Amino acid sequence: MNNSDQGIFDDYNPPASTDGSYQGTQRQMKATQSHLEKKFQSELEKVKSRLKDGKVKVGLIAANGTIQLYASLPIKPGDIDRKGTGHKQYKISLNIPANLDGLKTAEEEAHELGKLIARKQFEWNEKYLGKLAKKKSILTVGESLKLFETEYFKTHKLTEKSKHTFHYYIDYLKRYVGVDTLLTQDAIDLQLSNLRNDHAKQSAIKTLNVLKSTLNLTAFTLDNIKVKKPQPRIRDIPSDEDVVKIYQNFYLYSINRKSTIKKQFLETWKLWQWVYGMLATYGLRPREVFVNPDIDWWLSPDNTDNTWKVSPETKTGYREALPLHPDWVELFDLKNPGFLELLKIQIEGKTSFTDINTIRINCSSWFRRVSIPFTPYDLRHAWAIRAHIMGVPIKAAADNLGHSVEIHTEIYQRWFSLDNRKKVINLAVNRQDDIEALKEENARLKAEIELLKSALARRQISEIIN
Image 1 (cartoon, rainbow, N blue to C red):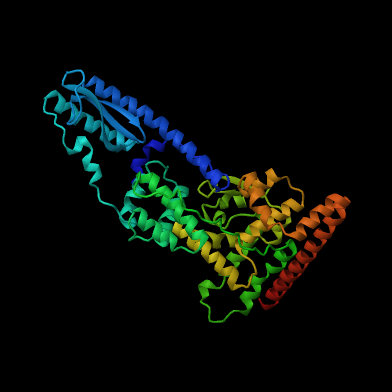
Image 2 (image 1 turned 90 degrees about the horizontal axis):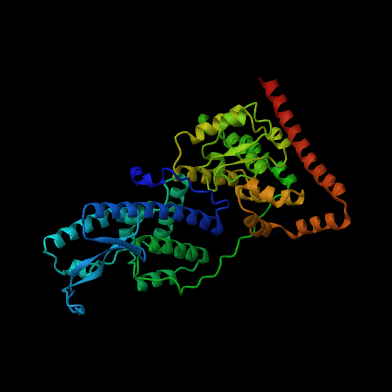
């Protein structure tokens, strides 16, 4: 995609989707469409004015997603000359899309038609009768991909977020629909009927709808296809006590691994232990640790609140995340410059979606390697649940996690186990908030003390050896 084609977005910054959900995405789309519509109407008026100043006897009108030409022309074959003038006002559709790129084509076509009218050389041929459009061949999915990209980024500002989204569309088309599949009703129906996984089918339908609307395809419809909403998988949400205890798995791995490991990889485990601590302390998405981290701010003495600045180029845009347990910043040694150097090395020169996705996958791989019984994302869910138990207002918790209140309520409450519900209800009914809170804190502090003892012992052994 050529960045020069993105001039229409120079004065526009799409709003963050807030949560990456359907509602958030729809808000983004509406804002972008509103921007494009204003730009289009402004440029359309300019083109009309130029045609009028040039005394071109052809007008333009935007209707039904296309730009049509209209002019006084000789009576069309088969039409009736009711006024007996030999001419009639006609609208001509050349299937020109009603967008800024289409305006350039429409202006060129208006000048060409205007010359024919002025020279009295106009004839009704296949082009102006609209028969050529019907002769276009049907594309396969693979043949449509380049055009899909070109047209998609005419209506979406080119950012890391939009590139990420488009990457998923291409991936879904290739994986679930197939590059050799014709974009016809029968072929699409067959491919979708072969998909047994509900998530795959839902992703395929969503992406085909985007492809269809972007390229104005009419050869197939998806309106009658029904798909069950995928069932969420069961998550193993760790308690705070577990989070602290399991943090040591990285160190235990380092002292029990094979001695043949290459020297340059000896310290790698420390980076992933640091990432574990960041995800647990701030409820971050893994990607939010690796995309343009503001390390200077993180280590700055002015950062007294220990906020982590999430890059604007991430899924839901810029925010400043706060720790749920401020003492974990020190407990997990999250401001250790050595760990931040490892982070710099890990992300150096890696900015594309594919690069960051590879790092994210590597993070999950390290969790499995050191035998952590939950995923990186489960630490985010644990943050959300703990915030609720601690009485943090939903709006504050949602803002800190970078999603809407609706998503916080709809999705994150899904992982709120029966035990957690009982705990919260008992707190409210029995008014034993302080006692229960102290019990929770006591269990967590015990785990933290054990962790500190272990760290101290390692330090003493290291000093004796050295």
